[in-house]
Image 1 (cartoon, each protein chain N blue to C red):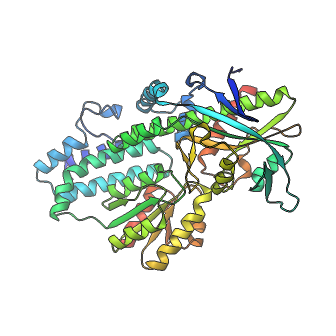
Image 2 (image 1 turned 180 degrees about the horizontal axis):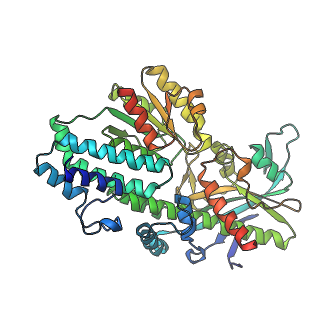
Length: 252
Length: 221
């Protein structure tokens, strides 16, 4: 699938990427999988609620996405992480093993804005916890989809230069401390993509994703990497497994 | 047991809130937890008998959730039906004719904004007859300490989803135990296990909402 997207260089090696809500392809089986239902087992009542949420999504999103390209190097005196730009990021082997052969890193941010979270909060306060939960699930699915599209865009840009990209990694996952968000944000313009960071390293709007993608000639994308991590209940694992299964089915 | 009370139990387990609720399909058009509770009270059925039936129903749905036979939406529907019953039973709690089992303070630890797990535990524990004090998400240790100070003899539940906020959870457990050594602290969330709970000094670990209820009920048995 080829997605036409526009990208603007707002600063040296810093790009804003335009993504429209119509670029998002909601997959109700994926959403059902995230909740726990196997394919086709999402109860009709909840499926109808999800349909209603998806219908309202275009008026409830404010999509922003972008990235900055920086040099990635090994530190001469530390083995527990990598140097990106002028910052040393302390990372687990799960992350460094995938990024170590890269010589560039794309530090990215993306968000769907705060309308969905406000909607969920309002529903929750009114006692409609089920719809609030499903709004949250659809919002998470949307922002993951935006991150997929952005990842794809970075891959397309890299491919034109004969380069490959790695999987994307986010602070807070893969044993990478969420506190490292502070370094990541310090390397990006202020309020980049309209996302801010709290002292406890949480992003606002909540439905935002930050992370790093390695770029280089010797790196590769792995379809499923969660078998390297011990956190079996991780929500991201469910999402990645669902995607990997779909990719395998397409190949077969 | 009375037929109406039995039907309330079915409504809780299946998440049938009231007559106009279209969920679940097999109970469409029938009275829900709302109407049936009013009928039971009109029949002079003891409020604590209704509550006991609701607690049993919440336990059944909680057990099903623990076995992955149902998922969060079904559990939330059950909790919603339970809350409807609780609205009718509230005056009896206030009058003292039925008592809560105790107070349970819950919050997602500092650095973590995830609230779904915490809310589920909160609703299921409340549905089992506990008074729940929900401190919200990204809760600093000082807020937990203040809530314990304001609510002596309460139990505390800490939730986290991010692996990386486990350190904050451990520090919160440590500070609670330093200041209030007799306070029971239970922890839960995706990155945790019995072992990690023990290492951080918590009294218990709950893999799911029903485990939290069972743990709390054992503590007051």
